[in-house]
Image (cartoon, rainbow over all chains, first blue to last red; front, side):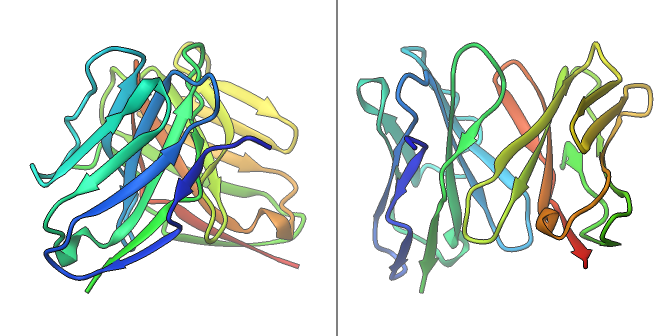
Length: 113
Length: 110
């Protein structure tokens, strides 16, 4: 089925390098979320896109983190100058504009060495 | 500060018995609540939801109860099956932003 997809599934990078994580939401879903889950923790909200509105960036932990959503579809989360504490699973979710249920992708496991 | 808490990191239940997973939240303005189930190496999948105008929502073996005065919700699974073994997350929120708990790992023993 055409669920939410994320790439890569795993990424190992050296401290200080930049990484880009990609999310393809379900077609037609107007809302898109990024979360991260650190080891033993819950899902931490990072950023939210809704249609053409300005994104809610209130969850981004530092200015090293940024995200964009092109054409109201694909989204890219960029982490610059990665640090070891950035190691986590990064999850993307999308939903329609009509209800609250979010549909999650499988996540990208980021390891910063 | 965590706005949604799941105080039990794990729960073990015998097959056929009831599983009760609990969740507490701090913000009385939250008006929608969801439960997600997560298997290893997969993203969370939506299970059941409830709005603040209700106190109970049932879907097959799954029932969610909401106690607004206590800011508490629970998920009941009856009867529990081995395939229910997973991590369960509760989420609470308002408008477009949801806060997730840290999850409870349920193990249903055959």
